[in-house]
Amino acid sequence: MKTVSYNGLTFRPFITSAEISERIGAIAAEITEQYCGQNPLIVCVLNGAFPFAADLFRALGCDAEIAFVRLSSYVGTESTGEVRQVVGLTEPVEGRPVIVVEDIIDTGRTMEKFLGDLRAMNPSDIKVATLLFKPESLKADIHPDYIGFTIPPKFIIGFGLDLDGKARNLRDIYVLADENE
Ligand code: IMP
Ligand code: MG
Image 1 (cartoon, rainbow, N blue to C red):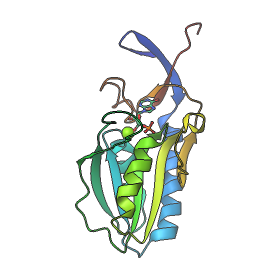
Image 2 (tube, protein in one colour):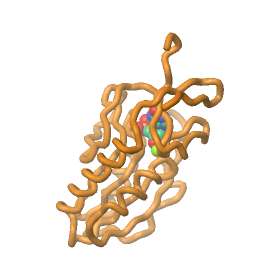
Image 3 (cartoon, rainbow, N blue to C red):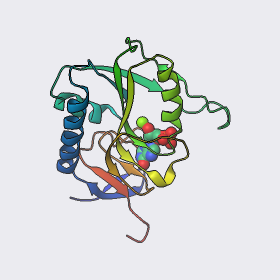
Image 4 (cartoon, rainbow, N blue to C red):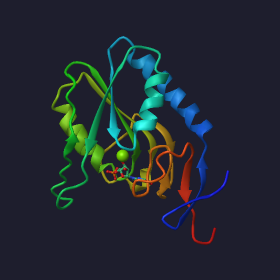
């Protein structure tokens, strides 16, 4: 695999599509075992999680439903910590398990705020599935239940992750190359 360039930055291959598929299959098998028969709702956090959510959803071995939310970035200062649901969750959630699907958890602040909103809707259970997790960047009290890959705090693109809206359609994941690479 070759390096790719966006906005004058060079990225090198990091995780292959085959490795991604394998991890998604394993996570889907776990979710299937734990939630089959309970009518789980998969909640995909737009935009970045859509390829992960699509593959995960299709790999589930039982009936499930999918819904989409889109969360805004912070409004105002960090201390107000407001995360708005730009596209909100309208599906009924009360009494059923919800699995929130994210592309990446970095500081965890977006997820922390969204989970607060979700808890108020009284699902029977809430789980967080993230394709990528940067534990060294974490600044919120978030413990993802299903993790595709734990990675160092470097900037990555591909498989839904973007640089200024670009590179989401890459099948593999790439990491920003160090200047001396
Ligand atoms: P946080 O966990 O609230 O800090 O925010 C996570 C969001 O920041 C993700 O949903 C991504 O949209 C974005 N993000 C964090 N790290 C990266 C990265 O390495 N590449 C691309 N987007 C990222
Ligand atoms: Mg995201």
